[in-house]
Length: 205
Image (cartoon, rainbow, N blue to C red; front, side, top):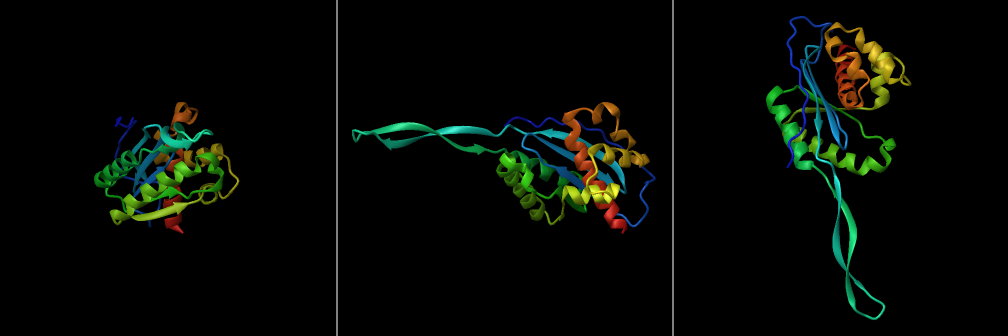
């Protein structure tokens, strides 16, 4: 199995921009069929962030016997369900839990607009959920609307609106560099960051 590609930058902060009370350590995951965004906040400050590259889910073909018009049986190749990198996802989540011992893990709540990818992503989310529960870590699911409303007070906010709101938090400035904001590869990390910040803000209510 191919190793996941990781971009990591770690750091410590002695002072948080978030007022208490807060959730001490939050692991946020933004799942995707190819990439998975990861952010860990501790006392409101990022201590880990990255993008994991998953092994591409592949459709494979299997042989089945079909009856020919003359009664003979023929072997025919037909498409079968995609092979998903579930073991890889389990290992990534387990390692993150073992390393950071988070108080909770937050993930985006599945929604219908996933369309064609919905079956693949739902299976990945179920694997993440199963791993989290095995470790007795609190699981929090937030919808995109909840995230936007919590951070910007506008459930119809754009991604740029969210970035602008996050930029006002000094602890997060290192994650909001211009080159990353405009790089689609890093979008999963930004979405994970928004999830983590939304949980942090909800804890203050």
